Amino acid sequence: MIRETVAQAPASDIAPILLALRGVGKVFSNGVTALNDVDLTIREGDFLSLLGPSGCGKSTALRLIAGLSTPTSGVLDWRGGSPDRANIGFVFQEPTLLPWASVFDNVWLPLRLKGISRAKAAPAVKEMLARVHLTGFEEAVPRELSGGMKMRVSIARAMVTKPRVLLMDEPFAALDEITRFKLNNDLLELWQDERFTVIFVTHSVFESVFLSNRIVVMAARPGRVFDELAIGAAYPRDEVFRTSPDYAALCRQASDVLVNAINSTAGSHHDGH
Amino acid sequence: MTAIDERALKLDPEEARRVRQERLERIGRWVLPLAIMILAIWLWDRICVWNAIPQYILPRPAVVLSTLYNDAGLLFSALLVTLRITFLSLLLAVVGGVGLAVLFAQSKWVEMSFFPFAIVLQVTPIVAIFPLINIYVDNQTTKLLLCAWIVAFFPILSNTTLGLNSVDRNLRDMFKLNGATRWQQLRYLRLPAAMPYFLGGLKIAGGLSLIGAVVAEFVAGATGQSSGLASRIIEAGYRLNAPRLFAALFLISLTGILIFLVLSLISHLILRRWHESALKQER
Ligand SMILES: Nc1ncnc2c1ncn2[C@@H]1O[C@H](COP(=O)(O)OP(=O)(O)O)[C@@H](O)[C@H]1O
Ligand SMILES: [Mg+2]
Image (cartoon, rainbow over the protein chains, first blue to last red):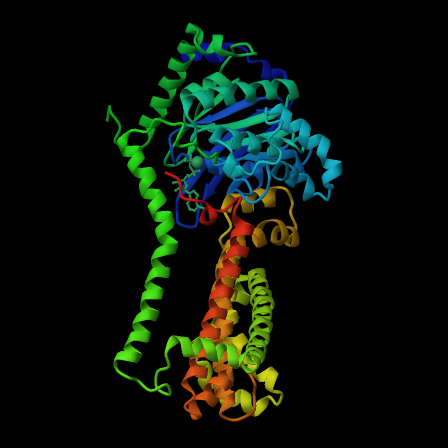
């Protein structure tokens, strides 16, 4: 069943390669091997999910790609040279906004750090806020917003510099399901309009299947790539897709792979061992 | 939060009780301390009368009040001198405390090297240091300022240092990802994040600078000539002028309370939109 899915030619196979991880490993000073010999190819326009249990090195992989950390072994091969920092947007699990600054100022921040004045930045900030459906909330401070709205601000801030790659580390894990579905839909819409590349970390099978065209399943101890799935379902994906039998079948496949990944971990105490 | 028109609501007994409870608490917060204060003053007055205590040992409250009025010229000019030292030293404590904290924040090494000295300065009683200052510094105002500063700058330094270092790790990464310079990180992230901590330190330092100003003058008063409230207290003590002693004491307490209230208000105004400490408790 899994092989069948992989056999479907994903659209991204013809897209140029953006980044290739070759034999990437990360060992922390406390002796934990967070990543071991990871090979991964990311193509332009991919919506790639890193799916795996907690502690399998998803965040570590994302931080390596963002340049916030350096690999112990292996290389990250960026096509077209190492990326300008401005070409990477990062969304954390928490909204991580400046609590004292207004929504506008929070989204302005990346531009401000590049020396762009408030007036010069205003059109881009306003446009980005409109894209995440937050027009009219420019002057609110984070405390006055709901969890979902804060996350929208965080996405707007990551996207305001128009990065080529958007890295997201379990961005919606703390949200309720209704809000998460809405943000999933809106993120897909944004991605389809702008055609940037997304690397999306999640531990939710359902979220990864709904969003991505490729799912990389990871296993823990040591953190490694276990398998890869292509999700061939056509975009745009909406509520109809979310309730379709196709979606359910894909979720089942992804879930099977994830269970195998979890069980593959030596010394794990999961069912079946 | 929008105010709820309670009369328009049909409240169940539990909610009604809660509303009543809250209203009572609101009033009680002001009325109770006031009532106790008035009671205490009345008791003080009665004790003086019942035991026929002479004025030079314990004056009646009314006598203190009239002394405050009769000696107003003397007392208020002395208050002004004390206030000047207090505010100047508080200002220096802010500049010095924040300045040092920013310096410490530049590198862990700087902080590790110099923070212990600040602690040494803090834990050594100022009264014990003063004789040295007395030898090395000539100018009376400078002496007092130095003393009050040593007492007041530490809470600002330690709080601001803590604040500058307690920035969310993800926010730090976010600034790094956006290529922020050191200065930008300080200006847009660490200083604002340290603001609640700084304001907490400022509230403590406000009271301490008054204490520092008074204590310094006390110690200096034994050796030199000064004209602040502390000197008036020493003088009144020598002359067994208890009413004036009480009046001066009253002015110092009042000043301390006012400083605290003003600094609390400033803190509230700055933090009210974003910081948890400034929010009204909601259930
Ligand atoms: N800075 C660090 N120092 C030491 N160990 C770390 C550090 N960051 C992560 N780890 C360890 O590396 C492993 C992978 O962590 P992480 O990448 O956060 O996993 P995930 O995001 O998939 O839950 C975990 O065992 C974690 O404890
Ligand atoms: Mg993680």
